[in-house]
Image (cartoon, rainbow, N blue to C red; front, side, top):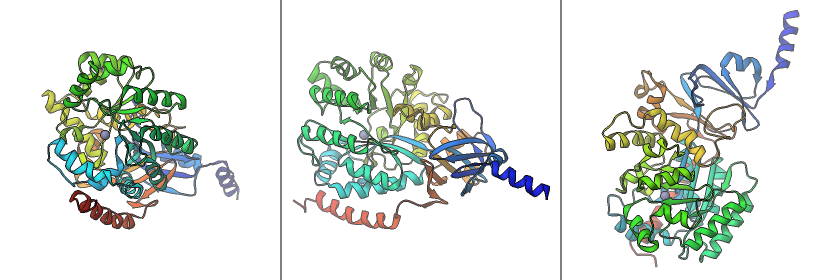
Length: 456
Ligand SMILES: [Zn+2]
């Protein structure tokens, strides 16, 4: 009798959580922290309440739901720091072509007639692919970004989204003045949303005048939102900027005052030593997209040199037309190997560095490192569970090596975003995958007609 009473008192003392993830190897990715065997995470009100050994967590917390991660790894969700999610509809449409032919004969004609519905469904497809492969946050630049935000919200995935802005008229908003107004309206609409952040996204230096870039800077500063652009992706664009403005791209940005507060620069393939110094001094954050850079033969970004200068670097897939998938596990593998072969040095870009780029590094780039990127009490609960008991992942000597060189997105079993499960046992909980795949067939037929010139 006394024991029962004691047991009841003991149970009453437990704190309430919404969800427990137990019995897994816990890899928090807090710098310096070692993996914890038989680890667990308690999640409460969207955030991580506690982490530790499973018996400790189960003694302290009770929850209506528990995910058993036996034989699995519990780790932070990945951050895809640069993508064009809706370009999933162009996956494999035209590959292995010279850049200008690819753009002018396929991508531009197909995009000129794209609409909000195409963007919405193609983004849902991207969200399904990203969730399935362990991505819990993505940063997007494209057209019809109101529909991208809507799709991300439906999928319950965290997203930073921004309408692409450039000097010429957009198939979405028309003249650029409307683009800036539209961006501002997006900021106001999503201001208090827990999952969606709006960014200001001028396309690139060769497509945006100094005047437009300055307007973007002041809008970003006014609302304290991220300013994101493509920078020095290939040699041709660097030459174009030099011809137009008489300066290299980073000097041009410095000259027009764009580096006065944080800038997120995607690609940064072609940089001089002086530009890298300036970039580090001005705390520009960089997104590395190795597979896109390889596929479009853009070059190899000097990522080891940027990291040596203390620059925040995240990892991105870029759009599906130039990758052709959104699997960040594969991207990590490519990132590690590309720099080794390029420098003829196998010690360059070790797996720990690459894994950090895909998690906390990406969070730093997006200015979200206090909220996501590692598993720590108080941070938002973006957690993935990855199955380890598979032939290609055994035996395990070094977990981080295994994740970078052996794992693929398909090894991810469960995904929790903002404290809520969005995939359990590889079943998507927020999206109707059958409906999305069916819709993509229709979209593909429409696109085929456009690029064959059958639709005027
Ligand atoms: Zn891009």
